[in-house]
Amino acid sequence: MQKNIINTTQAPAPIGPYSQAVQAGNLLFISGQVPLNPATGTIEATDVAGETEQVMKNLNAVLTEAGYDFSHVVKTTIFLSDMSHFTAVNEVYGKYFSGNYPARETVAVKGLPRNVNVEISMIAAK
Image 1 (spheres, rainbow, N blue to C red):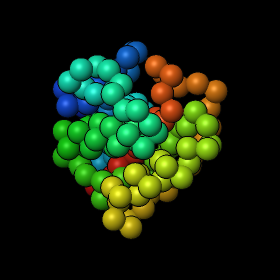
Image 2 (cartoon, one colour):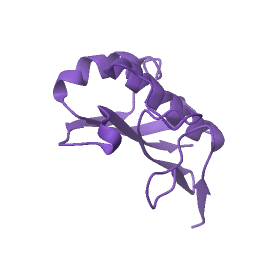
Image 3 (tube, rainbow, N blue to C red):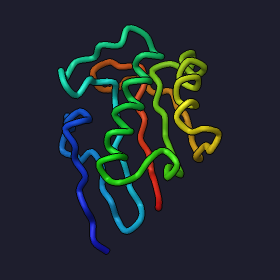
Image 4 (cartoon, helix red, strand yellow):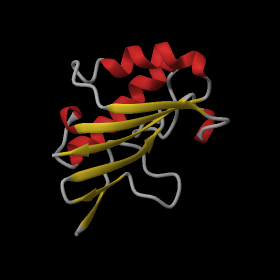
């Protein structure tokens, strides 16, 4: 099976030895995105809702680069700095799926890159 590396300047560059996404067959595996503004490389959000909005914009940029959209997403993983952010993240996240929700898990972790509050990874399929 051929593997294609997906990269776009419309999402933050990886901050480690990984790709933004890898397409294998009809599956697209998107690495966890944090709320970095790709134009500035900084975190501009002032609350977890703003962080989540930037994360979803970054994920959309990677999906678009690969020729996918949110309707193709079958699985997500949400990492939170604290489960108290669960409701705020859900409010923003849910707007991107129009009721066609993928499978998902949400976990609280001890820390995230750049001390952000939310990171989301995705798997999409055509």
